[in-house]
Length: 469
Image (cartoon, rainbow, N blue to C red; front, side, top):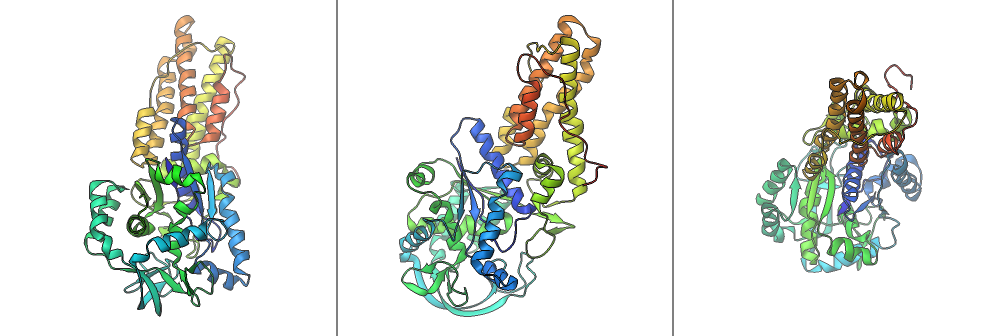
């Protein structure tokens, strides 16, 4: 499975919304690897945006300096968020990206033409709109732009795109987003501008082949990363032969990925992605988290304060499949304490304590009281991380209920051994099922209940509430 995230602009450092998508992609990758499937997880940064140029001008630094600094912050999320991506592409520095963009441009040359354009442009979206304000909430007024650009005959692919979506060859989840895209396509597609004047782009970006006065539209440039990141035989392996190619993205960029990108590929005669997986937004006080509009939450600072498990678990346990999720540190702390400290930590500590006390640490055989692997896989196939996390958590809940029901401290002989053996087996299965979601927690649980003889108990988690941070 080839799994990709969107590549964000680097006009500022990453925020918690970027962490959401990266963690979701990481869970999918870890889950499918655990099932023995070949996986490539790809992410990166979009360095060639006008937003990056304007941010550098506002800061009074060279564009290259700002882009390099902020791109490094995005790549640096690997450690704090425990990400397992296999490739990280930067569109301004990847050795094969510019050449790949040029190849695609030439491959669709039969669908390109030049014409004059007048329109209203949102720099935040890097997109033209027929009227204002920007529908994605960027605060700056739309800019009136009048120039001659290269256009792509998107209208030529309206029927083909509609058929791909209706037939499920291009799968869009959740269904509400599929219906949204299909309605947009069936309402009629207009040709789109796919270049900008080099003067307006401040000379930053990839020049249009054989037309140096124009630069390639940043979205065209960025979308190409899904194939240009694949060097040598990787392209054949992961884009041509791979059965599943899944793009993860926020709802605000679905049109680019589910309409423009497939049309580009159809025009170029290249394979299509198979899955478009869409999440909604994180908000703070009801407002979308944004680098430019304020309300940004630094995921690294959150990890420093509360730990990677707390951050990953809130993103996976609290964010719904459909609908925005409002973030507060109080909610993160409450979820950590309820689930990780009181639920998981308490369960493992009780089990290890009883095995050490009653059986001198020796582990008897036993079967776990529940099997959740099917429910977890089904939920992740539906792109429902909250349901998947809840399915894993049924192991914790069932095991804790089993302790309370069987009361092994009141049992003796084979009955006690059978109960404790089942509880150790449950904790071991929990470590397996938890690994895609919380790799550190899974490793700690596995270490606590691994082997033929358990060591002395040690707390997995301490409560965060009431602790100064």
